[in-house]
Length: 419
Ligand SMILES: Nc1nc2c(ncn2[C@@H]2O[C@H](COP(=O)(O)OP(=O)(O)OP(=O)(O)O)[C@@H](O)[C@H]2O)c(=O)[nH]1
Ligand SMILES: [Mg+2]
Image (cartoon, rainbow, N blue to C red; front, side, top):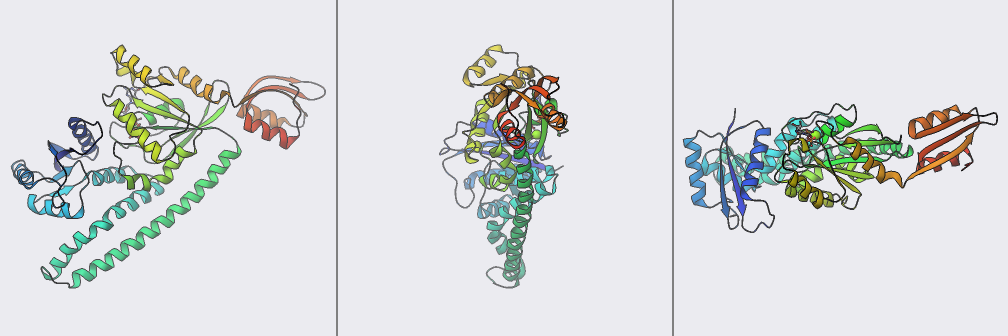
């Protein structure tokens, strides 16, 4: 296994309220997920990054020493490094240095399953690489003909860069095809007027566990971060009979690199499309407030922060401090305490979802011709049928139905409402 030394940095200029230890812990979790052996995690507070090394010269030399003593293969930084910084660090420390984005990309590439997910990751990787190629180019030209010679190395680099740009264009084009396909699916869903509920939340909060527990989905669940990359939709019937669609997608992270959000915008569109968001928060995590903030920042970036939102305070089975939960409930309006793992308080969660859509439900009493049994089936599928009477003049039905769907069916079939 790759032996890694983690370097967690806190810049004095950083305004977020993440403590150094918390950033260090999160980096460790990312490293574990990436399956490296964390040999040590050292922390430092810096004024501001230096253009050449990010950290100071003294600190860099200290790292070189630790790397040698502890037989380190890779040094992982909690911040993103420029090409120059990375190259200089590589050289002085004599080890491979990796930054946070690279680490996340590594996890993403392990977890991408669908062809579209794989393309998104590859695109993000190439986009990360491209601006850094200038640095690698110097190394290439050095090997090609020594320092300062603009020989075959440089030319090779040009070709490589051009090739990478071409590949980027091709991947973007492929993604557009997937987006088109998704549009068609979206339209179909819209035609059914089925409300869409999106599960959002910090990575590892328990979104997929909740989806599996609510539906018969088979989402993969794991202790690691970013287990889910590909979005998934599942149908769910609420206690009042209303059908909804519930979606699960990629988790969020504190300081999620902007270009990663960009790369995953297509799949994150599920969030912007939703009628209601369920924000799954891990109530047992001491960083729950920071997680909440990070999620709201990403939602804002996706322009989905104005949507109706229910906060599911998850993993309450792990809590033994009732005061903590009371505090969370007070701080998060419209929240329900649940355990996705043990299906605790699901009735409350479902009622809350239902309540959210209640204003959109119609109670109808209608008469349809005997020849339209298909509509009876549809009502059973899409709504809650309260009573059916087969009368001589037709079938009399009492049904609770989603307003949009009701309007559509009544108009298209010219059916009159009795009451
Ligand atoms: N004790 C307890 N563990 C839970 C609960 N819900 C989820 N977990 C655990 O939390 C871990 C992460 O769960 P996931 O459902 O994979 O989380 P996720 O939000 O889908 O994570 P990503 O897909 O990585 O964003 C797993 O080990 C789950 O078993 C819960 O209610 N109680
Ligand atoms: Mg998941």
